[in-house]
Length: 178
Image (tube, rainbow, N blue to C red; front, side, top):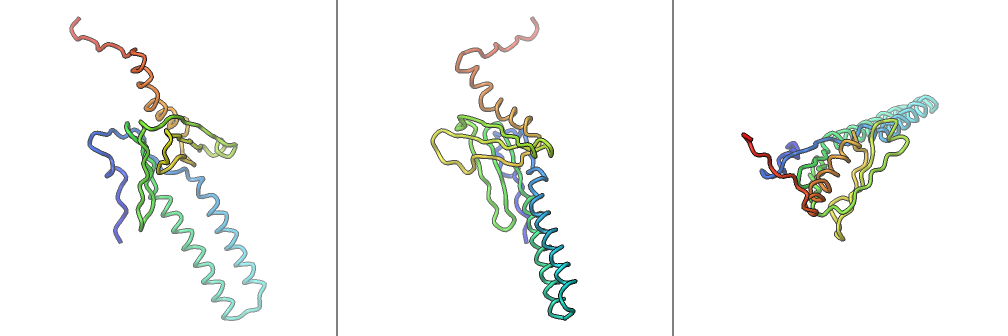
């Protein structure tokens, strides 16, 4: 099996990568709790049911399915990347079927920053990206680590220089030697 392509391979030579992260580990809390609960139920059921080869096999294969499912979810989380360049926001995901979603920063009209109580406790947030009347590949990035830093970087890329350019307030270049 071939490894999925790195997200950096999709960055154009004219782009500059600003941020490259994977989703916060807290996205894995639900699969961890689900897998743990099912494994505990399997162990309890196996201990309380009469001893038989059938029950032992059923418990073994049930636990194997839970572990394989959890392993696949961890692998999917591990290969998923979020990249912000000076021209677009990209999100790559998938192992067998690789998908890269992209939103040009020029189409962004509004950014919303959301941080729940659990997000503040664990250190993640959500950024909602709105665009000018078109459906984009994605419109929100959830479970993003260092959300304030990433929100400020995207805000600066989208609204920072453009606002100055529209009003004509770009600083003049400095002359050397004077």
